Structures are given as structure tokens and as C-alpha cells.
Length: 141
Length: 141
DNA sequence: CTTGAACCTCTAGTTGCTAGAGCTCCTATC
DNA sequence: GATAGGAGCTCTAGCAACTAGAGGTTCAAG
Image (cartoon, rainbow over all chains, first blue to last red; front, side, top):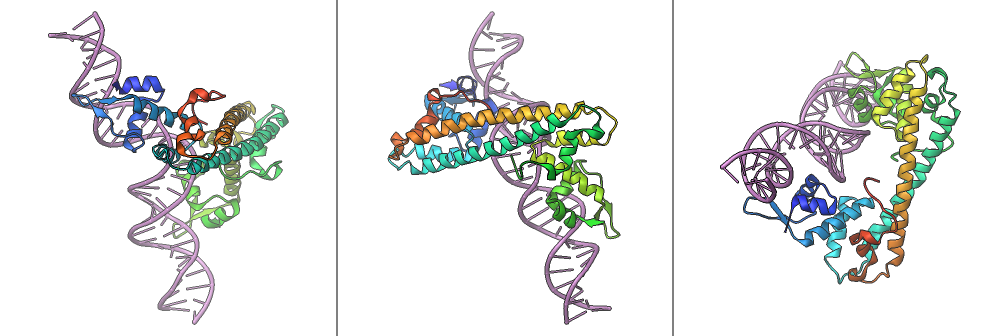
């Protein structure tokens, strides 16, 4: 049985984050020692590693909740898991596309700036006038 | 003089967002009509367009605050503006790199999945075992 | 047995908004 | 001039996914 600190150290998830995951029901309520401190078995380590890796891949906590509940039902079709992962892949691709447009835009702003004064700074000017943009860009990046 | 609704319509920034920008000091306090409703001149439109475009390019509100205060001092060197834009470009490039790694990882997960049951689903398995990843990936994406 | 690191709970803060309640105002139509 | 309803007002609370801090308890090493 591991303390929350050891679990944190072995998984790389911070202590308050582990408590937060328990609070929102991503992790089951931990057993407690006589002195009311959380104790974890190996299973919790695996579950937390799963959560961490999923977060690193950009899945939302809601997605992860669903993926975890799927992983608890080994006999079911994995189509649902594929749907979630495919959706995530879509988000990622979309974000890359947007960010590449932003990159070009920022590079253009910067290369045009002659390092003079603000009054003829192309960076400030470019921010003022969306019309000059090479790419349309809207909404969140 | 425009009402907040008209300003919203001409800039594409939602009404509550305009009020929020005023609240946090990104926009100066608006003049008011006899009946206490906000009234905006053309200048506010330009400032709001600047903010909007900057947000679309991924700048934080703090960055924008600084860029706006720079744009109010036309005689200053624009080096500071370049620093902010360069930092932003760095963030963007970094994010693209991370997201491309995630994309590969997600694609690998999905192509390996044979659409069977959860128990042999490569998506679920890949999420469990970070060790199998082609790329290291940590922290926020 | 003492010290201090690690644990506990609880509240509040972060970013950039968005949603809702409950009210007032303005404008268009009759 | 009355009235309906859309637009405006303020205020509070909520979203994701944590993070930070206060103030108190427990555990383990020396």
C-alpha cells in the first residue's frame, strides 16, 4: 500500500491532482489508514497511469471517464473507444492546421518589422488590420 | 455613437465579452447614455478589433494589454512588441511539434486496433502503457 | 520523545469567458 | 400616448483542470 506521496512520485501526477481526481470520481475513494491518510494498491497506480497518459494525449477528463468505464468491460466491442480516439485525432489535426496558419502569420509580422519605432511597427499594424492577413483565422486556437 | 449591441455586431465580439474586457481594464470605461447604457465611438471599435485579432493569433489578454499600451506610445522602439510576438511564435511552434507527436500516436493506436473487443483493443492498451509510445510526450498540449 | 516532512480538509484563485436571474430602458407600432 | 418586446443593465455563479494557501493532524527518522 502506497501513501499518496509515493503514488504521486511513481506516476508523476501531483498530490493535489490525485485528490482532485478522487473528488470528481475519476479515481475511486481511497482506503484510509488508521490516521485517515489515503492508501493505494497497485491497481490505483495503473488507473492513474492510464489517466495521465490519456491527459498527455489531450483527452478531456470526460473522455477519460468514458475510456475508463470501457476498459472495465472487456467483453464489449471497442468501437466506442475508437470513436473517442478518432474524435480526438480530429481535434488534434484541426488544431495543427490552425496553428500552422498562425505561425505563418506571426512570422510574416516579424519579418516585416524593421525594428524601428512603434509608429511604423508592422507587428502592431498587423494586429490592427485583420484584412491584411494571408489566412483567415477565427475562433479558438 | 454605437450601442454595445451594434459594437458587438460590427466587431464580432460578443456583448458580455465586451463588458468583460471593460471590467478587466482592456477597454476604457464606456461613456453612458442618459439611461446608463454604454455608448462607443469609432476608437473603441478599432481597439476592440485589435484585441480580437490578437486573441485569434493566440495572444493572452496580458500580452494584449502590453501590446495595447505599446501601441499608445508611437515614439518608442518596437523591440518590446517583437519580444512578445517572438515569444508567441515560440509557443505556437512548440505546440505544433507536440501536437504532431500526438497525432502520430493517435494514428498508431487507431490503425493497430482490429475493431474487436475491449480486451484486445489497442487503443485502450496504448493508453495503459506509455512505454510503448514512439514519442515521449509530457505536460500540456 | 521530538522534530519536521508529509498528510488532512477547506476555500479561493487561475484564464477567458458564458449563462442566468431579475431588473430597467429604448424604440416601434397602434 | 400606451404598450410590447428586444436590448440593455448589474450581479452572481459556472466551465475546465487544476494550483495555491491556510490551518491543523499524523507519521517516521533520529
